[in-house]
Length: 237
Image 1 (tube, rainbow, N blue to C red):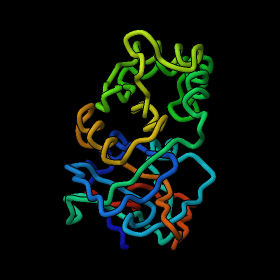
Image 2: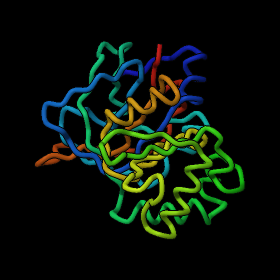
Image 3: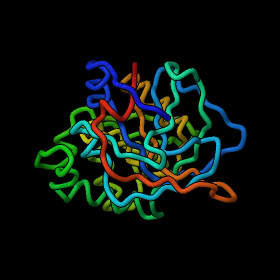
C-alpha cells in the first residue's frame, strides 16, 4: 500500500489520540462491526488469519511521532476516509491466564509502571486522570469507573483475587490508559466492545490493533520492524 504525506493536523491527531490494543487475537466468523468514525490500523488484513511478530513496545515510539514498519511497509487501514465503514470483528484476550492478578499487583506497587512511555514518575493511577477501567457486570453489560475507584478495584483484586462488595461478580476486561496510548487487555473482550467503549469515553480515535488474527491456519506472518516518521507512514487525510 502506498503512503502519502498527510496534513499537519493529521499528524497531531495521530500523536494525541492513538491507542494501541495488545493481546491474543482470533478471528470471528462472518461478524462484521461498524467502526463508526474511528480509524483502525492492523498489521495485516483482518479478512485472513495471520500471526504477528514483534519484540518491542509500540506505544513509546508512537508518542514520539513514529509508527513501526510492517510486513509490506504499510498498515492495513479501515475507516470511512478509506472507503469502508465496517471491519471484521476480533476476539481479544490477555497474554496469560494470570494477567489480571499480575497487573493488579503491578499497578498498585510499581511507581515506574509505564514511566518509560510517558516519562513521568509515580503510580499510574495518580498520573493518568483520564484512565478508565471497564468491567463486565453479572448480566453481561459494561460498567465504566474512573481512576480512583479503579485503583481500589486493583487493590482488592491483588489482595482477594476477585472483586467483592458493590462490584461482586464484576470482571475487569480492559483498562483505557490514554496517558500511555494503551488499551490494556485484562479479560476476554472483542474489538467491537473496545471500539464502542472508546467511543463512549473519549470519542473518535486512531486504534492500532497489534494482535494476531488467528484461524485454523495462519496464512501470513506480519513482522513489525524498523520505524517510520508518522508523516511518512500513514495518511489520515
